[in-house]
Length: 294
Image (cartoon, rainbow, N blue to C red):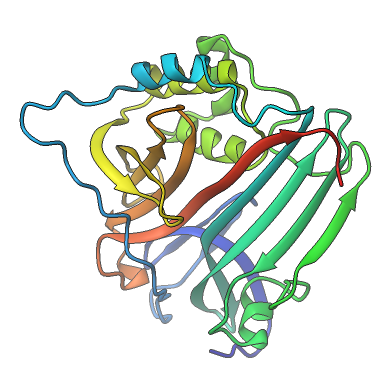
């Protein structure tokens, strides 16, 4: 698709109705007048979840927190090393009309304890034109090539500057960042998992907070988009103005996070979605520590 006229680019979480668009991370609100064309986005299928057989006790987040405390895999250094594949809604506003598209991307991140960092980004959109990618994501978006950026200490933008606290009550407040939305802790966790390799103790604290400060409940088992099996936990939310569902997929043997998703389940007529529709997903392909930034 091609846009003309003055274009404003935002990465969207949600279009709650014909009149309002909520932007992720940038904290902006775009007003879409009722006579304008609604946004439209094709979305991937949600992860299929197989419910537990009758009589089989569900895995609990408390169980996984205990497991995480004993997990030391991937702890070989002091530099956090993450590989994440993700899918997000992007929008363009041109001549008062809003259209949206979704492009998958891959980021490899190294983050040292002194604040230095390196990222390698790749936009995984083989079916999209360069013009579309630049219109929706930005003029400097990597199209079919990887882009490396190095950051001096203190120059890499992050949601959380320090290590997560391990006291559950303190951690809950830290993750929510003073927000009173019903999904504040969950959004905080998804942001944290993009930035930090959690130690076993930190992961146990995060799982404990998810158990005590959210409505996440065991939903069954699934396989993530990298083909890895895990146990699924889901929670409903109306924080974005429509109905949505959050999903976390966690490895049973280690308590490690494999994936997370946000799914629209209703109340977003402007997007013309077929429900349920994935608005974003994160596949945590790798999370380990290394000795140095390469």
